[in-house]
Amino acid sequence: MAKVLAVLSSGYADEKNNYVTGWWAEELFAPALELEKEGHIVGLASIDGGKPIVDPVSLSKDYDPTGIYKKQYDSGMADKTTPIVDVKASEYDAIMIVGGHGAMFDLAHNEDLHAVINIVYETGGIVSAVCHGPAPLVYTKTKEGHGLLDGLKVTGYPNDSEPKEVMDLLPFSLEDELKKVADYHEEKDQDAYVVWGSKQILTGRDPQSSQLFGRELAQKLSQRELQTEENFQD
Image (cartoon, rainbow, N blue to C red; front, side):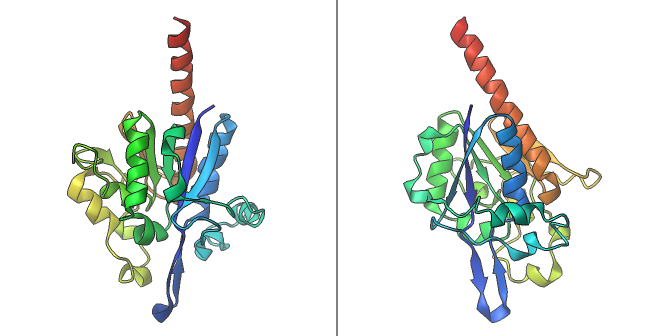
């Protein structure tokens, strides 16, 4: 049984442009379900703690036609998060950065989050992110001063999928920033796409990749636990 820290955006509002965003429902709930199926425990954190703002679009009929994610959200599953500054990173076997445009605003440059990511990474844990979730990974430096993603194969939300009405409101292009430091892949011909940049770095492309992303992370954690048990028995 591994412990996974899911990190959510606390949310962002641009009143002038009537724009509200935050974390994306499917990108939390779909991976969390896959992790729980494997017996792993998922803890929640956000920048501010408490109840973070979900992107309302992610709960709409267009993106949640069966209402499964809205039901999970309404149940209060994501109502309580730990402030990232209070997280004991050494207790976790993996960190999972949940996407949604909010990640680009409050997660990307947050130094407390970068520190948590580094601790998980340096203690041998898995660092994973889906959709816009890789935003903070772009700016995370290792203790040696190298970029966490430098030269690695990665994916994330592509430019050509961004809604035109939102593009000018975003602080940067995730695809462009990833391409500056890593080997970015989109794989348009695949309905869902995730990639292991190393044995410790996992990224997923978009909401449609969330379930596969969660399954990959869950299975890798289970494999690690099995190997640890076998080594201990030896």
